[in-house]
Amino acid sequence: MIKALERYFGFEKFKTNWANEIIAGLTTFITMAYILFVNPNILGDAGMPKGAVLMATAIGAGIATLTMGLYAKLPFALAPGMGLNAYFAYSVCKGVGLPWQVALGAVFIDGIIFLILSILSVRKWILQAIPLNIKMATSVGIGLFIALIGLRSAGIVVKNDATLISLGNLGSPETLLSIFGIIIIALLMALNVKGNILLGILITTFIGIFVKGSNGQPITNFTGNIIALPNWEEFSKTFLALDILGALKWGLFSIIFTFTFVDMFDTVGTISGLAAKLNMLREDGSFEGADRALVSDAVGTVAGALCGTSTITTYIESAAGIAEGGKTGAVSLVVGLLFLLSVIFWPLAGIIPSSATAPALVIVGFLMMEPILKVNLKEIEEALPAFITIVAMPFTYSVANGLIFGILSYVMLNLLTGKIKKLNPVLIILAILFILYFIL
Image (cartoon, rainbow, N blue to C red; front, top):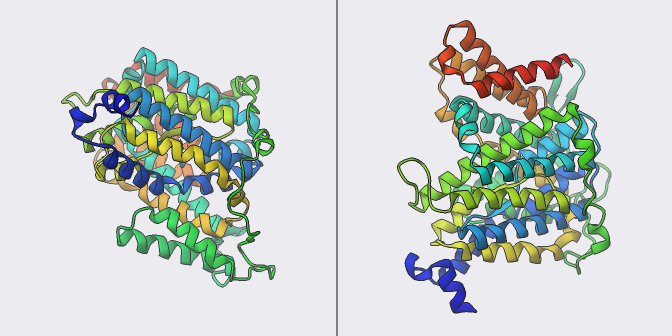
């Protein structure tokens, strides 16, 4: 069995062994395991049961990552995407007021659409149709959106009737603990400690045991149980709870489009970057196994929606395992199994406070800002739509609005300046659909 797997993954071809692949898998898992605790807190704000979400996160990520390893044979790991989970909870559920079951239905449809596009290779002309500046701005805008959610959750930014938002009470025990968490994670990052975000969450949670909150009770409500046998009754609260018919209504077009759009570009950008680290990229930007990687990602999203979590996508944190020498799908095999084993940690979902996960959101938001360096700010018809995309996401509290306004402004500016050659039928059709959406 072991020898058969070695041949299947091509150990001899890639000059690797089980020791390298297992160490790389452990490194990747530790680096991205923070999502097990952050995701339940975010989706919990949408009304979803946190214990069930942690189990759905572990199982969905496990299935998706195993698919990536066994089918695509690539050392890429997957889990619910940061940004998409925030869009799910705060824009779709709390903003639009949709039940989380309907939002899960939209995620499922997104996965099916992405799966069809991946199988038919239609994604190539869709990807080419969206301006590069909008693609880069999307990541930046989502980063600001996530950071704002983290700052609000930490109590650093609060609602103000006179100025909309203002600085919170920095003397609050919960806020001070969050600030401590941000500093700890930043310090661990500066010291190049692996798993810095996860460690920061756990350290902050531990400190919260000894810090009394505003209510006079310890911020971390430690019950003494951090592991337990999988609670399938708890998991059943989200498993197959999606409402697909509710998500098929016309009024949800922009929501389904946003899930699909962000999922597509996030995935393509991530796997391209990871392939570059593996020195697999060809001159045309393709690489061996790319189509299977996209199919695996789509399968993960479908599986995640069925389990009860937001869109699953490939994680850039996989680069940590690649840097440790991981080269084949055996790395993903290890990560996937570790995610499946994580279902025993479901009690932690009710223990880790928002004061400990808020710092992680701020840091992840910061990490998503890097593409700002690639945004073209010299041409107004390129720069202004990118700017609108970026600022609309946090200021309207919606990823969808940022994408819609960015694409609309890009089409209008280029039409009005006579640069119609820069547009393509896909962009024009999208702009018309968006206008109809707002009118109707």
